[in-house]
Length: 562
Image (cartoon, rainbow, N blue to C red; front, side, top):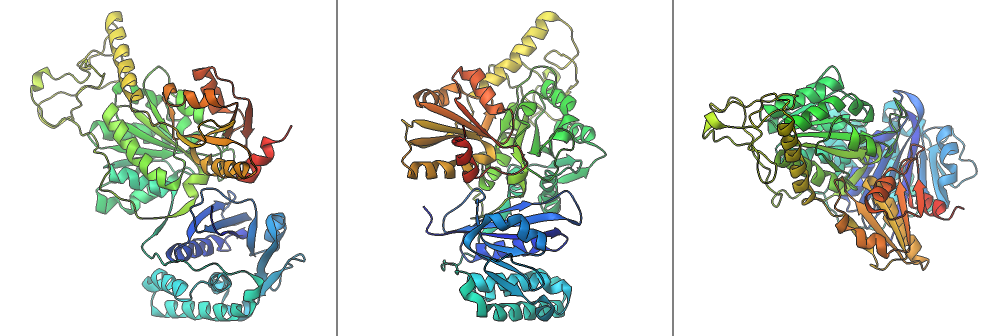
């Protein structure tokens, strides 16, 4: 258990710079040695609307948002009203001296005095927060210097002077807020979100092509690849629509480039025909679906787990596919790498199913270790026996040797029709059966490589909490609280939801007296899948579908509702 666990909410309207303050403070805390988990809540607007940036600080890693906050930094009056109920009874409101703290303990900031221009109000906010939390002044000074050095020495000096003035002024109010315990400095640690982590994992696996049409919250996967495209030799293409995105990526894959396509549920709806094309071509491809509430446009900047069954069944016909569901920012890196690896090995589409909560969520981590990553399968560049080459050669495991057009004399055929071993179109019924069975054989091979679910708790638990993807952190936290109350609780968490190997987890389901499935959707999609595969009843469902992430408090409240 952590020795301390604090949450800060920085809230206001879009355009007030609260994300800048939140990101800078999160980086400072990370370098200072704290475990940080930060989440963004924002409306689908350029300016206006209510947004918030929530930072959870502890001495142990946290993987979910807290239900209460200790400090509320309000950029406008609406922020006080919106988050008043979340503020701990001993919590503090920090706000402008022109706003009303609604009878809560507060620190009123004279922005007009401390900021020479409105432009510097964010720096004032950062200085106040750093002082009240007990963070060394050198940390924000160093970060501001790094950020503004490209803009010139005067800009750096003005920002650091403004920071210093706000920091010194705040030292008169340290009794209003309990300072953080000191930690060992870790300047080499990183602060990273889930989408960036997926992109880095894909780069580590050798991704060379990305095509996309911008769609929140998936676009930052492509942006990360753009940022590193020159040094990593990656081609990134923004196309006219999602239909073009996946088809172009299939063309790049056919030409030998490991390819990835980031999108959201609405974009994937336009890709389903190309997913089927990937299936019959047996062409490696990775699709990242960063889920948001639907149907249609839905809530573009909120979170949900509503696309599980769509990801499973999107695309006509029957063909193998793999669906990975990372649970943490760190695991996003592993899944980015694994997705490319599995796509290239099994020559099949692989889907990474994440969501806005994980896509935008920031976590402090050690730098990723690249030394022990598994090797990624490469195409066959040998060109031996080119005249007899068969792209869809029947093999014991259903995986055919894959060559690249233009590397030698081998003719590499590919099309969207039923075909023979060479790739020529056929309507022969016996050959059709043989080629379908070839794909089923490959699916059997994939099932031997399924990631087993993680189990946390007593093997003979009375109550088993079942979850998948990003909700694991909240579920584990809820289980820990229930265990403290004397309940015998365990957690079963899935980072791969298709295909599944029932033998990996059947004993856990059978041993539990009560099984509870916890999901971020209204129809309990994973519970439906489990019941269909195992015939084991799920006694209770805990769902959330209001666009907000699950928390431990929410789960526990719903667990005991009649």
